[in-house]
Amino acid sequence: MTASKTQSIFKIGIILLPIALFAAFGAYNGKDFLEGPEINVEFPSDRQTISNSYIEIKGSAKNISKITLNGRQIFTDKNGFFKENLLLASGYNIIQIEASDKFGRNTTKQLQAVLK
Figure 1 (cartoon, rainbow, N blue to C red):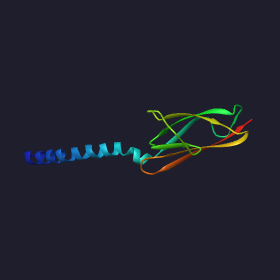
Figure 2: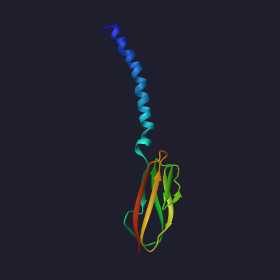
Figure 3: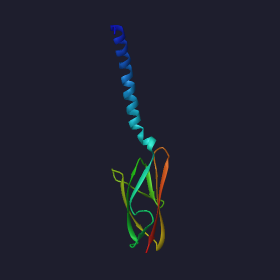
């Protein structure tokens, strides 16, 4: 290889390296936009039969700006975990958790529980 070809390759590398780093940084920071809001419920599980009318809903949420339980706003801790008490009616109950992100996208987790 001649010195001029080596210099040309070096110049191209100098130009492409910042572009690649900028693209990687943008992809990493854009993952929240790409993933959207996410809800994971630890307790209760869907279609669970429960014997106590007063239960604690436990779970976590990612990439959210607002979260509600049966239409009432609840809050997460700094790690995205939530715990909220709920009084179940006798028989069949629907528990609905909705979350939205700062880009206006929504997700819903609906659970069914039977109080015996």
